[in-house]
Each structure stands twice: as C-alpha cells, then as structure tokens.
Image 1 (cartoon, rainbow, N blue to C red):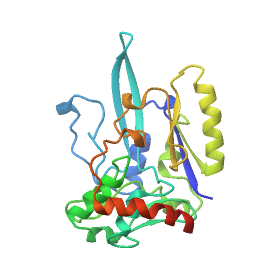
Image 2 (image 1 turned 30 degrees about the horizontal axis):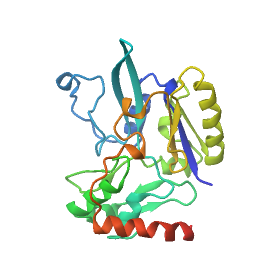
Image 3 (image 1 turned 45 degrees about the vertical axis):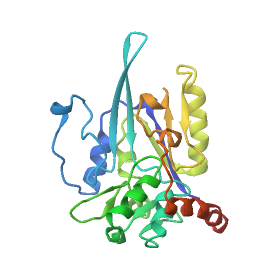
Image 4 (image 1 turned 180 degrees about the vertical axis):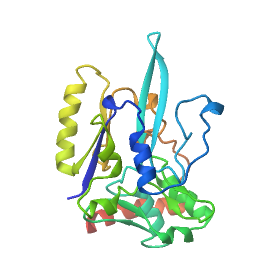
Length: 245
C-alpha cells in the first residue's frame, strides 16, 4: 500500500517550516530573496530546482474583506504519473516510482533528457511541478523524502509542521482522515473540497475555490493546448500500464 500526504490548508498559517525543513534535509542552496521587488510575502516566486516545496500566498477580496489563502505546494506523486509515462518514451527508468511508497523519483538519468524532452515531460504534469537545474541538467522536485521513509521516518516537512496541516501515512488511512476532516471543515467553509483525491498521493483539503489559491491546484485547472504525438502515445499507454500494475 502506498504512502499519502493529507495537507489541510484550513490549518496552515504559512509559517514556512515545511519549506525550510525540506530545503535543509536535501541540503539545497539558498535562493536570492525577491520579496521586496515583486510585492508578495511568498518567497521564492515559484518552485525551482532548489525549492522542492513552496508555501504559496494568495490574496483576494471577498465581500470587501481581504482573504489570505496559503498553499504548501509540492509534487503530488500521482498514482499513475504522467511525467514518468512521458519520460519512459525517451529513457526508461530515468523517472521511477517506488512500489512500496508510491514516491515518484527523478534519477540521475534525467540529465540525459534534451531541452525539448524536458519541456514535454513538464507539460505532461497537470500540476506544472517538474523543474531542472540548468547547470547540471538534472530534473528536480519533491522526493517524498523516500530515503527517510525507508528508515521508518516521516517526511521532513511533516515532521516539523506545528499546526497539524500536514499528515502522512498509509493511503487508506489518509483518505479516511481526509473525508472526516472535510465533513468538519465544510460546516464553516461550504466551498471546502479535496483536490483530486483519487489520482494523487498528496491530497489537499482546500476551503476556497481552487483558482483563489493557485493556477495548478487541481488538474482541471491546467491550460490544455494541442497534444504532441508523444503526449498522445503516452495517453494511449496509460490503460495498459494500469493493467500491469
């Protein structure tokens, strides 16, 4: 049985402890601070090869009141990962999925993808997550702290979360907890919903319309353009890969 995150945004205070813990655990270099220049408390402005996790800040007016929404973004570790399907068309096992945890992992082989191949892999992701280090050409994203899981520990971001925003465990248990929390949260926030719970192993409970958080909160929010031949082939391959699983 795979492992799953439940990220309950109703409890997030944007302390960014998860973002810092992720960066420290993976020993990622610092990013240049840009908060002053682009007018947001969110920093850095986007996911990048050195930030696998990013707490997004979004504000909007609701009935004349400014409302803040916080969204601790990361790879969703899809049950059937489009990035892996697309990557396998070029270099098999450059992107892997751990059978015991469900973690989708970018390996050293990802540096062999050329620019066009990388862009197709990134376009295949419905959440716009994959990034690449332009110097090393290695692809980068959340690893689910898979090495910690193999030693009986929880992901670093979950370990440090002080508010209970982030829960982690067996998929069946997290799905049950997600439904229980949703029923409670809906009493105060009727718009509350779970983001793509059937397809991903990082399930978000959000309390506002998805577009009031971030463009890629749910898969349906992705702008859909013309499908390339390789993307079409990857789509055709999905049912057969599901049968093998």
